[in-house]
Image 1 (cartoon, rainbow, N blue to C red):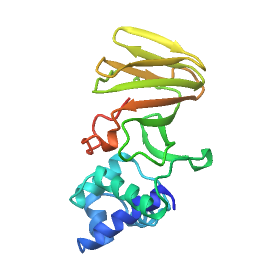
Image 2 (cartoon, helix red, strand yellow):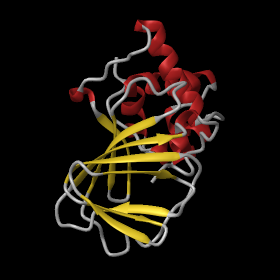
Image 3 (cartoon, rainbow, N blue to C red):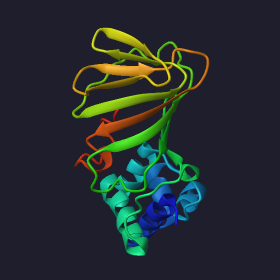
Length: 203
């Protein structure tokens, strides 16, 4: 069973347990009934902000929904340690970043690995820097990644890495006309760190 199916089933169970119809959930979240129906059946992926809307409408949290997914997976077959490349799915999309899930074992883990494809940046995409708790490691797989940490700016090429504490103001972006692909590993694991509201996602 795919991860989207586990999460969808958890949402379906909570919605029915609350005697809420798809229309009522649609009205509460602004998401279409068609999309919600497909999501509950595991036929589509979902962005973090949309999952947050669903969790809020159901009186729960993203943390709880994802925990239900992992608990269901554990009951079915135990922890899924191996993740195949063909199983990669879109975890969420934000601005010009496409974030891919590359692990089936996020629950209870300290680190949060992702594969990210950065589309060519718009002029305003890299004007804001971020700071949050934790650490991050970035490995460039394809293309050129521009990283700004504090007042310093670096261009990273395939095979180059960056490793720094996230409480320093920072941002990264693709300043070329081709896609850039990177592997990132963050601490803490944002989905299981006690901050399930979707805020302060690593960037």
